[in-house]
Image (tube, rainbow, N blue to C red):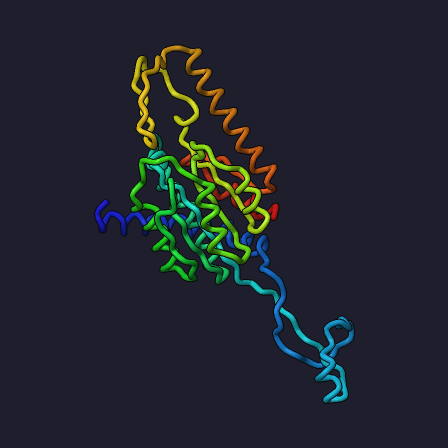
Length: 287
């Protein structure tokens, strides 16, 4: 895409997602993620009903009347967006490519975080980590993240989700909200999911096109794997072949859902073009 097309696309995504964010998501986001603990705010005179544990004994002794410490919630959080940029994510048969759909969801999440003064960071990965944008605050930063997702060079390589998770764990020590975007077409080490979900709040988001799950009858055709380069001829006119393909995809999805459940992590299966805001709203509400 040319620069003017990128700017136009980013602006369109901002307009669409900010309406959704302000209307449905921002309040639920704030309620769901209440911060990492309590921090000292001020000292004031004791009032009836205050907890005894909050008494500031040094100041109480100095002024010979009781004072209490006022604590407030630490609101600032860090959101990390891990986005698969393997070649299969640069694909779509409906209204959007997977990469465009991911950019839109990332924008909704990013603007929700920005509205609560939280930081947002981005990791683009495939067979390795290709780009890292450190967490920052603000609208301009979110627009930069959207642009990077849209304009990344989508790599003809097998995606290594576990490598991306391992990298994130090594860099970001503080507990974060982690949103992992991928079509999960490649194998990964499920142990890393368990490790990551113990420290971070993890949501895996499988972004799929309807043709990922079912292939129509188009006769003999050459199927091409965009990541490995492997090619194979298939008789898509065969009802048995189409059934076996669809069943294999269903089994892969069930195994994926089990991996996340066993890791105490959350998971969503989202078709491009569907209304993701309802799914995110329900996710925030459950939290």
